[in-house]
Length: 109
Image 1 (cartoon, rainbow, N blue to C red):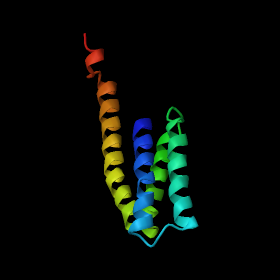
Image 2 (image 1 turned 30 degrees about the vertical axis):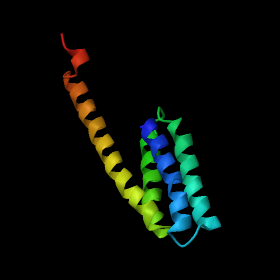
Image 3 (image 1 turned 90 degrees about the vertical axis):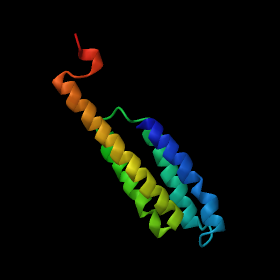
Image 4 (image 1 turned 135 degrees about the vertical axis):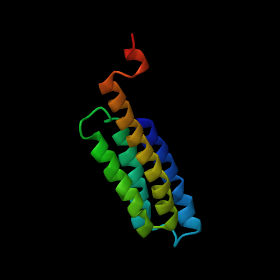
């Protein structure tokens, strides 16, 4: 999940030139929002061992989805990474289920 947050931060920062060129122009508000999200994601990558990490990650994802207010490109990045986060949560649940039933390869015989 930490790697996904760092990757998402990079992609979110790559939205800055798109907003400046194609969007309504880069303003203090839009630039601050995008840079603030990216910084929060990078800092959040360092706290993935905490009990509150997943709610924090999902809150960041919701803020990226709210990026539709800032620019369509940021919202599109939010939709793309929402699918990635949904898949990560599915994989996490699947591994925990297999672990509880003793079906992981390291748990066999």
